[in-house]
Length: 340
Image 1 (tube, rainbow, N blue to C red):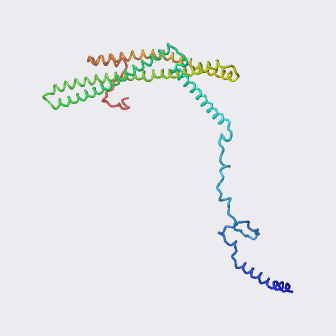
Image 2: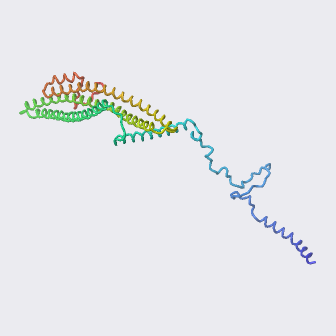
């Protein structure tokens, strides 16, 4: 009986509870009416034929994400496995490897030569010629240094004589009582200046020719000599290596190394003999050229200096004309393009 009463009362109260719940739901704001809210989940399906445009219920992640660079970045030729690039890199590595081995062998050979622990290839005649050439260059360099000093000092002498002649000429006009004395002194300084400019042209030509011989012609031969000396060290280094391998026990590994050493030895021997021949030829032609050039320059120097200090202006001018030297006054300006 009591259970029946309870069930009856619940039956009467349930419509009231349901009505109150519906009223509470009506009073709450609609969630989908807020455009600025961020929601999760998926939106319920809405009919599109009614012209309804649904509001987004989630962030547009596809439009705000950073663009991927992995797929758009072009691969380098190395990443693509370009055989040309890979081969070039392997060639560079092999070149560095060979250079390191050669440098080590040459350094070892040079140190052992200084310590007297190994032999070296010596061409007695050629070594004497090379040493003589280096001694000649040292002596010619000294002549060049002194000749430049002489030309520089004499240039200042000529400048001083020119200024002194101008001063005498100016005083001749302002001092009537000594006019004659000032005039012939001014004339003497002008003649000395003119002859000094002629001698200065000869000195400058001599300096230029000796400089070319000493710092260009001889230096070119010395460059070939340095290459020859380097080739000699490399040749001796690989020769010593070949001799040591020839004395080693006969194994497969030693046989392969011996064949490789023999190939390197033959290659460096050809290069060494070629450079030795080049040095011999250059030394021969250099000696002939040196004698010809210095004969002409020493004759010029002697004739010009002798004619100047003896006061023979005619002989001095003839000397410069003989060697096709154009004299330019140190006080004159450069000629215009019309004069040229």
